[in-house]
Image (cartoon, rainbow, N blue to C red; front, side, top):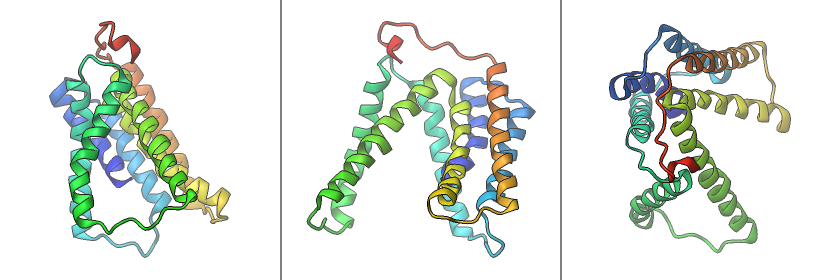
Length: 206
C-alpha cells in the first residue's frame, strides 16, 4: 500500500520525462492532498518514522512508479490478457527460486487453504492485474495510480463495517480528503490530452 501511495507523485514526474505527459500544478496538488488524507486516515498519534522503513518505502515506490510508466511506454501490441499473463508468469519464475531457497516447506494443505490460494491467485492477482494493465493502456499511468489511494480507504471502511472498529472525526476527514483528491485527479486527467493507443487488430482487445 505504501508503494502505491508514494508512487503517485513519482509517476507524475516520470510520465513527464518519459512520456511527455503534461505536469500541472493541479495534478501535483491532488497527489499531495491524497497523501495528507491517507495520513489522517491511518496514522495514529503515537506513530513514529523509521528511517529504514522510509527508505525501503521510497525504493519500492520508485520501482513501482517506473514499472507503471514503462508499461505504458513499452507495452507490446498484444491483448491485455496476454500481456498480464506474461507479466505474472515472469514474476513468478523470478520469485520461485528465492521461495524454494528461503521459505519453509508448505504444511499439508486443507480445502480452506487451497480455496484461499485460488482466491488470491484469481481475484487478487490475475483479474486485478488484468484491469490494472488495461487501465494503464487506456487511461494512462497517472490516472490509474491515483486509484491506489482508495486502497487504504477501503481497508478502513471494511474494518469499520465488518470488525466494528471505530471511525473518528480525523479519520472521517481523511476519508473525505482522499475521495476529493481522487475526484480532482480524475477531472485533471480527463482534461489533459491522452496518448492514443495503437489501433492494430491485436490491441483492439484492450
